[in-house]
Image (cartoon, rainbow, N blue to C red; front, side, top):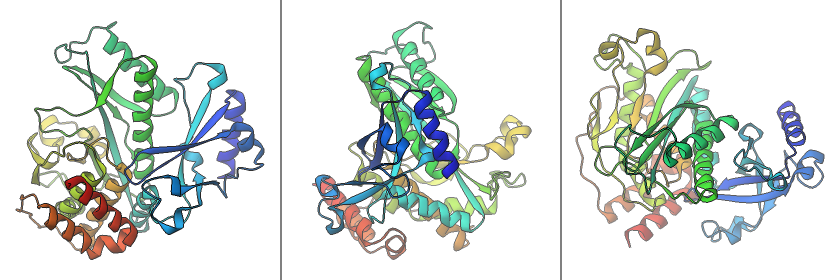
Length: 397
């Protein structure tokens, strides 16, 4: 940790950074920021890397009713450090870091960290790949027909360049046309993947403001795709072997992978409730099943060995794709619930579970289900459950 902090201090000096944004998420998943002077972090005078910096949580709507929120402490995570490469003005050069909120029960980023640690305690490493999907208002070209020097292509390239310059690796990006564009981020361990996705959204939105080029985070209206599909897999402790893969299985899916997916299907009502509670957009619904087809199944399990014969990539590629997440929801809380569901499936040996219930629960049913879910109440705490219920009631009104 100390070595990483010293490395960042050097970067701040070498790049003549003037400001640093310490960011955290509220319950709905929106970024909140406290800006500090770089010299404070370099000299460690009033802002401590290890002890954090105080914020008044009672000023934040999501937190103000919590008795412990009056004075909170945010702790910067040095491994999330990024220079904001889209800022060219020397007087405004800035960097950013994600923070946890010390000992605060409504800190959803910490909940994802805790869920990840439970897997690590079982010698498993959850890995997520995210897709940044956005709509460009004036982009009416056909699919894959982007002109090299068109405004949309230049904008897409600028977003990707800023991500790469800030050490956020991009797998590939597609100028879909017809209002939609997609950037695939290289898969990473759970919390890192959520941080990078959050920063990618921030970068894209910031560039749209700088260039007066409106974008909207949104999936395809007429296809079986949400605005934030998540690619998930489990690896061993050292992240050397993909534990989802089994060449002999009809889905090329190991028993461990099957149990994980069945746990997600089993708790889909809870995951769905968190998405509904923390999004401002309609939530697409999918059949609660997993399939190898590109259909309306909640979870897709792509076949690589049988269909594509990419034997050299099998161990790396085997994954499931969870389709139901909205891009504006609290990705930290949703991924935490997703991991806890998968962990339940593993712990309870749900190898042969089939969830044939595709009925969407009504308001009262969903709220009662969440409020009386002992498993998630134990994992997330009373405060988180109460907030999900509160938000659900407001959304349905």
